[in-house]
Image (cartoon, rainbow, N blue to C red):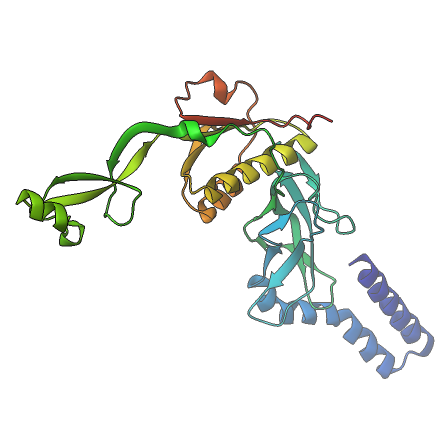
Amino acid sequence: MLTRRILYLTAVIGCGAFYVAHGEWVSWILLLAVLGLPWLSLLISLPAMLRFQLSVQAPASVPVGTEAQAELVGSSTFPLPPFRGKLRVTACLTGQREPYRPLRGLPTGICGGLRVEIQRGKVCDYLGLFSFSTRRGESQLVRVRPKPVPVPDLPSLQGYLAAAWRPKPGGGFAENHELRLFRPGDSQNQIHWKLSAKTGKLMLRQPMEPQRGLVLVTLDLRGDGEEWNRKFGRLLWVGRYLLEQQVVFEIRALTGQGVFSFSVIREPDLIRAVDELLCHPAAETGSILDQPCPASWHYHVGGEPDAP
């Protein structure tokens, strides 16, 4: 904007000098036209400026360590006027704020949520000589997602199966069955016809499944630097490992807003849980291990470096 104002001032001085030197009516009309041009531009630009709004455009999620950019985007129902502004990036985990630098891009070296918001925004007339503060759109949340980090020393899953068995909901295939008398409402497909013929009573093969105990993965949302990458990477790897074993599990995490728990049945549940934890503030004190965690299988995700 400063450059445009300097150019306009130069044009005014030039037209003024031309009028003083010649004093003809053409030079006078030219000087008046140059003096009135900014006000005409402002009048024409007002509808677009009043309908103008700034917003942030950035990716919703990126893998850790991937280059990513954010930019200001203007919108208006009229031809778009010139605009300018500055962005600010806030790390959700630590609360640290810093101005956005386009040449460096978004800080994606560490896992976590990044909130990109408009710090200042101005809209100008079409000539770029007048500027006014403008409406700002909502901030944009960018999730820097982790890459899986293998965990070699996981506890065995054998211990999470209890000795008790229960009828399998909905029936279907099962390795173990229980024989019992047929009751009204039972499916006829499960009748054991040979045994029924021997006993003279309708007998049923009831599919049974093991009564599984609680599988628990815990995490303290605390750390710095590469420790965040290790914690979230291990959480993602352990979660996918359990899902591959067809194990339903629960994630419990201590954050700056308290204890949060997530039930994970499928891969999308795991991704949603990790994404939400990326955007929580870190816990300052305490540990999730200070609370009772009754579970048949339990793994606590730490951020310590792997032993050499």
